[in-house]
Amino acid sequence: MKFIIALLSTIILINSLQGDEIILKQDKGKVVVNIDGNLFTEYLYANHGRSKPVFYPIIGPWGTRMTRDFPFKKGTPGEASDHPHHASLWFTHGQVNGISFWHVGKNTGVIKHQKILKLEGNTLSTANKWLSAKGEEQCSDVTTISFTAEGENRAIDFDITIHATAGDVTFGDTKEGSMGIRTHPALRLRGSVAKGKAVNSGGISGKSVWGKRAEWVDYWGKIGKQTVGVAIFDHPSNPRHPTWWHARDYGLIAANPFGVHDFERKPKGTGDLKLKSGDKLNFKYRFLFHIGDVKTAQIGDKWT
Image 1 (cartoon, one colour):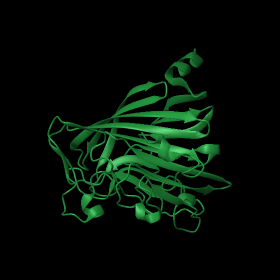
Image 2 (cartoon, one colour):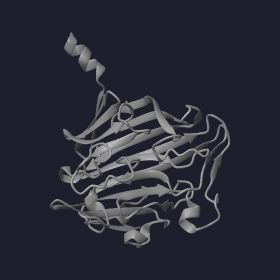
Image 3 (cartoon, one colour):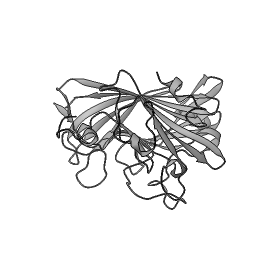
Image 4 (tube, one colour):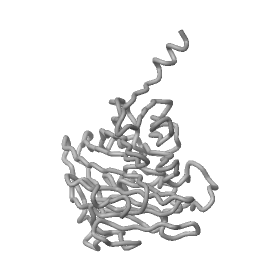
């Protein structure tokens, strides 16, 4: 009987795509994603010491760790311990009704998990509230996340809908946002263990991808003996597509449709996006963790 109860209390859902078995398992404060019996990632939404839901770790091709360990683990060789708010992979923004949900610290916002709406096949849907440091709701979101695999390649698709559920809401003009990842240190463009390279859909490369508009950005390099990379795709239906990129040479890559002042030196507030009470705003992104460099992975052909 205890075995049956334990079995029923655990949600395990299986989906077979491209011959790869994908299992989503709900656990305390997280959802664990396995592909063919191996850990791909964990969606952490409670009891993880962060002010927002995040994905950590992320295990890509050939069992390669794709994101930085810090701030979850300290002392990993070659890692910098800067920017503790760069927590593996996340969605948030640095100015929502004047409140920073990007940073951590005093008077910063919290994206608080409310419930899991769906856990089925390869798909997870969640509801979250965006709260001030005093607990005042600024807006909410419903986020659907899908996981796929093809051979060694792994992908995460995001469908994020922001709802103005607590009055008007303004996503402010700042470079500090929004759909981001902090890569494994070997994918950095500079640093003691850096072996990374970067290019965007317009052919701009290296650190010059920062602040440019593009349909996608790809970072790749050798981690151990294998060349792997991560590409982020901005969906054509997204507001202000193609987005600007807050993509740095130290391993931060973030799609940001709001930071026009910082990226283009236009007047402050140019990039503000305002929602009236009851309105909603939708974003879609894909993260592809791939084998090889940008050409081998045919990243340009994979953008849709």
